[in-house]
Image 1 (cartoon, rainbow, N blue to C red):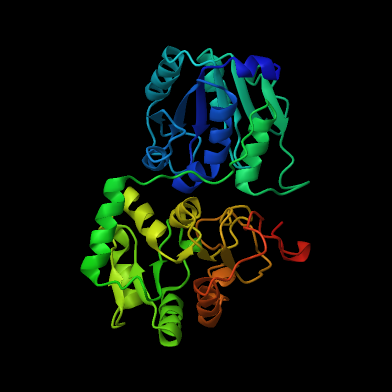
Image 2 (tube, rainbow, N blue to C red):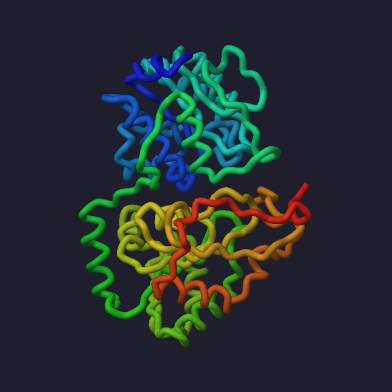
Length: 374
């Protein structure tokens, strides 16, 4: 199938079945489709977490939520629901489907869904010849031959059918009501925005991606002692206890754990001079709204660093890097626990003082071959 056939597509299905951060890192590629296919209507097939982000991405017109049985986080269900989803996709009369995956995922189950739904154009990365399941495919060479940032991977995929954009930033637009609500909250907390302040997000869905709370606490204490920085802690309602563990007894700190809707969290990060966070969804939201990030980056994977925003990516080299595990298989979490609180405080101070990399970070984490997991 050639680019001309893709340019005629008007109803486009984008499939990204992962989490909030994954959808955000796909948003530049979705923008490329929007700008390259004039008048197209874009529907995102995604998880519940992805759908929460999609409502703030203006390039997306509609969203379908689906718990795909080939993703580990999906709740089990009967095959009747899968057949119903195929019928729903068929009823959508889509002209084209783009299947976005990380390199450790297999695109062929989603490709089969689109094939059975009668979607005529189907694009994805694939390791093996998909024959009729995909009309357009890009041979997947990662990670054996090359590594790309997740954003670049998806931009390259849609570029293969002629879809490009000059604006490769992540997309997330909080509403005016979100911005007003956050400013009122900051005023109520007594945050003096003329003085140094930062947002701290100590949680993450996977245990392997959480910087130890006692080290988070010491890093916050050092940052405060050196700068007087006011700290606003965020997290879900289930992370409120963790937040209190980190900030207990520390003056000049405030908790909004469990108090913010997603749009309000984005608005808070847009207001903030800095985010200090594990490698999790808020780090990508901060990148989308242009806020510098100190990213405590567990070496579970190499390609999810903050995109096109000033950042400091902190980790300790380990022999077991890039394990893709939700829990450290060795039980030591050394890739994070080896980062010192002083390093975190120094990185935060650099960014608060206007420190910039020569270019915004679009790189993957690169560890010497000897330190990579087999």
